[in-house]
Length: 184
Image (cartoon, rainbow, N blue to C red; front, top):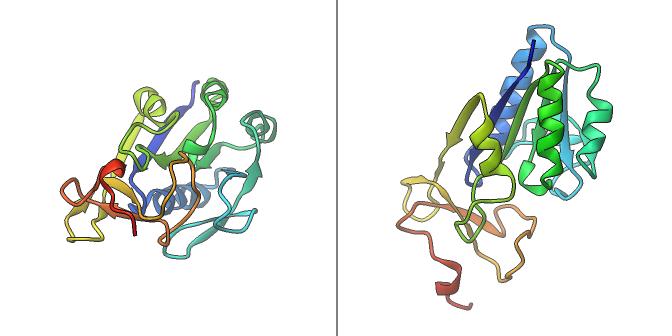
């Protein structure tokens, strides 16, 4: 029997990692063998932990390339992968192989980048998911539902790893297109 893919996505601070952790904890309660992987690019928390914004932590295995996940996931029933936007397209093949092996794969990641454009492989994973949950945050400017990630520090690089000091969740009205952001 084939497995399944569950994708948790949205802007920053919407609860993606918290929902991933919730699903992993429930699988543990059901006596399933679980594991979480995280990209080495994400340096915001300890290497062997996945930490939510509210401080919840679960053990994780840090990987550099997607093939490491396939090598280490054999004995697990449920595989969580946090911050999937940091992985290249090779992760898609790894996930498809895990599904073919009957694994339940739960991924979380940003759906759009700071420019408001689809982020990496996440839109592809959204398209092939058995279950898709797009979460919203609270706009840090006005309090309405937020769907955008606003970079508040200078820089044109696609990936600048950071938290509240570098990004804010924003609604469509409060989001500023990067070319329109005023220099501070």
